[in-house]
Image 1: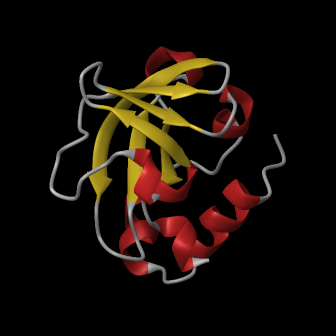
Image 2: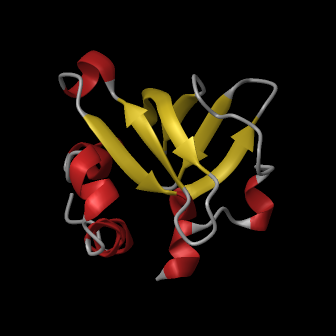
Length: 115
């Protein structure tokens, strides 16, 4: 599952380039903006602020769902629908930092979404 927590080489993201503020496009439309991201090997992710779309919920997406980064348009395209992202577990800063199983559970959701 650790491969799912890394940016695909074809995605076009270069480690060290900030994605904060980029718009996020699901397969069926825009879902929000990136609030934070990580390039950490085996634990790369983006946190998306969905704004009013789902009442300001922040969601963490493993880097493995990123299909493409368009730096010129400042957009990140992901391989999930709005509903799949809306139904994902809410980003939990405490669990993210202190619970070693959190990434595994979240990765499992995105590999087998129920949305």
